[in-house]
Every structure is written in C-alpha cells, then in structure tokens.
Image (tube, rainbow, N blue to C red; front, side, top):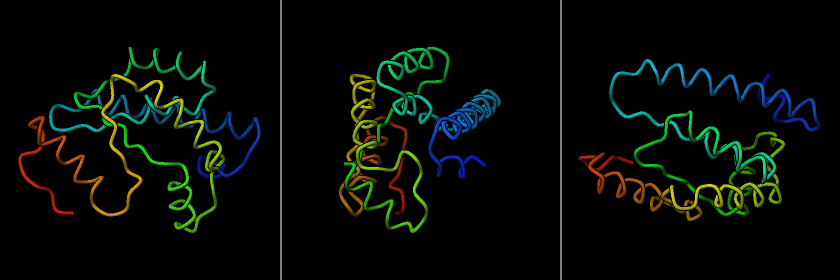
Amino acid sequence: MSKGALQRSGAVAIAVTTVFYTLDVLASVRQYNRANDGVIIFVRYLLGTAYLPPRLARLAYSFFRRILPFPDTPLFIDIEPSVAIRRIEARNQAREMFETEERLRRIRHVAHSIAAGEWIVVENSEEGERPFEAVQDILQSRGLLGRTLDT
C-alpha cells in the first residue's frame, strides 16, 4: 500500500505516505529500544524531514532530532539529482511522487541546510567503489570498522 501511494500524486497519497512513514519510524524506534549492542544504522528518519516544505522540514528535524536516536557517526550520502534520476530510470520501475529532478533538487537543498554542521557528507554521484570506500575510510578512522569490507 505504501509503495502504491508513493506512485500516486495528490493530497490523499501524501497523507497515506505520511501515515506509513510515521508507522515505520515508530516500529524502528521500538526495534532500536530492544537492541542490546552492535551497530545500529538509524538515520534516514531525521533527514527524511527534508521531503516536507522547507520551514516545516527544519521544525520537524529539530523536533525529531531531540526525540529520535542520533548516530555517533552521522553520514549524509549525497547525490546530484541528475545522477539520481539516471539511476532511478535504470531500475525499470514506476517512479514515486518525489522522483523528479526538480523535487530532488529542492529536497537535496533542504537536506543540506538541516544537516549542515552535524553530518558528514559523502559524495555518491560518481560511479564505482569510491563512495563505498569513503564510508569505509570514515568508519575505520573512527574505530568503527577494524577491517576492510569486501565489496
């Protein structure tokens, strides 16, 4: 149902996707609270607020930043919208409501503004292994990764 709503447009589709997004956040927080140890990757909800209108996005980010878990190593995997569109087209699936170059530009701009100063930006627009290696280097430099990962 969520995927179907994302492939539609209009106020009802936006409301349905917002409900599913909220349920996903709550389920993930519940799972996070049950975790005892290990590495937990839990960041998309915070920067997901960039999909909201800019003023509301900053307010929502501030609110969720206070109540959701925040990573020890916050990584913002960035991509040029034109590259994202090319990759989206290559997957051969129906596009979601936010998957236009114009919307991705706006969302990216908002995400950069709310992530500034707190997040480590990793460029993911180039092809190949360099973005993966950049993440690996960051994790190794922070003692979070003791060995080289196979790609």
